[in-house]
Length: 256
Image 1 (cartoon, one colour):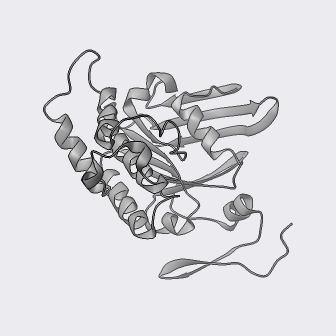
Image 2 (cartoon, helix red, strand yellow):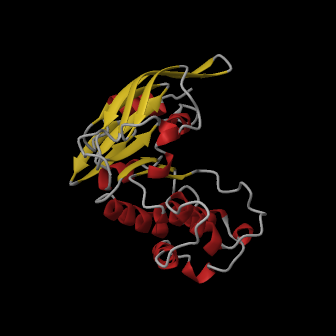
């Protein structure tokens, strides 16, 4: 691992468009290693696009991106990614166990067999996400929420220095949602985490910093959602009232 003084993420003056349609405009922010960032914003606001830029899947029209001090495509082996869409290639005849083992390929030298610690790590990850009892099940026979759990396990076994998650609990039951965020909080002791979420309650309970993305970006270095962020994200007035635990109150308003 690089020195902790090296930022986990640096974005300077990032612009990105799809076929001349602006998606992100002049994005600049720095995230320190060891942070747990929650990202909110409306659908279509550019959150997933921003993740893909950080992963090196997309390239910005202009601006500079560094992940752990490297260009995104060079840092890929040091990051984990859990996508929102779990339906891709779900007809491929591969077991849950094999899917998670693939996560070890990121740190296993090509042409080498898996090491003696790979399978125990896979078992531990599958137990943490409650899927060990389905280890021999074909991935395509699982529900969307179960596939999401498997993809989280696959990302974890790669021992990433940064873990990116795109709405990791969108298809899972509420009990598992709480369990996975408890586990992510534990994982945050040794990895930087950046997650997209629509659950504002997650922000107050788990994350250390917040970003709101809707073409532009507002970043707050504390787990505090401001009215400016929420109005930018959801385009309606929101008040925050604290009684030990943050609450959200939506005054009566017209939303067009």
